[in-house]
Image (cartoon, rainbow, N blue to C red; front, side, top):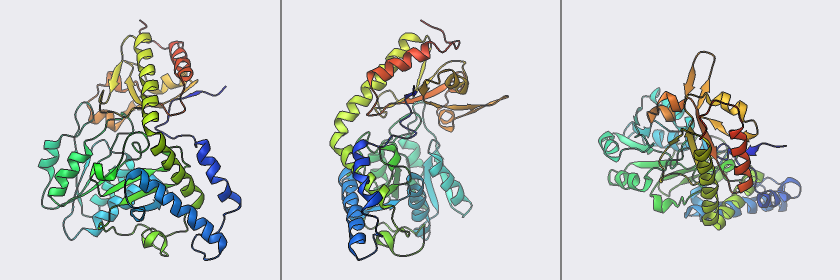
Length: 378
């Protein structure tokens, strides 16, 4: 029997509708999209249809979408590209202490390239302080990169407010929206951003494909050099199969967004309520309201997360701390939020999806209750 899957923030299964649309590109439409013959034209049509589907979800123009290999490449292209293309204007970048490594590691690299990076602190809920952001801006600031929603605790940042502040200073704004696209609205004009990263496998599309929204007028230094693919912005023969899947996934995400948001929240709250009924002491990590509808990060007191997960093998979830024989490596997100070790060491991230059922939640609760760990039962 397969475990109950409650790790949708890590990755999602491919939606059956997405898989169905991809099938012809496995056999019939195998041409190189740069070729002018029939086979190439069919592949090119698939790419451009997908480009329009993604643009429709994000509320932008199709030619503002560039396909990538995933969220990490999109983040690298956005941050490195903006930094090097605007180096003549300044060398200061602002990000936060709770970003995904696909952002923080790029920033660490840029620090070795003579860029200066400010890592903004967050409050106990994982929110960036707008006053501290404003204080961090200097005449040398060229880029602000802040995630739309946190992958671990689900906290949603006030990106539109951040963009408004940046616009006044003519600063480029990038947001890593890998976790938010398909779960909440991510319209680029509502957010006011210049660059937005999408990861296919977070919204029921295949792994190994993503997209980057680049607002018209924003120049980026190339990340991959070669032929003139993707409007001469990203060299390399396109991953047609993955791109077609991503396009369909975005079409479905827009079509079903309201329904999926309500369903994921219902399943998340059912799980949270069940845990509160069955477990004595429990800490919710992240903002109670300004949070992704599917994300539940909870700290069990004085329990090692890795051992907890081993004892609930019938539930697939993620740990907030990596425990070793002599110490525990606490998540940088929980550390930045000043979550005490009592709870951070035992933090588990559960994340629901559009395929999660009430039976999944109830089954997971029974497995957790019967785990045999020393949790104070009510």
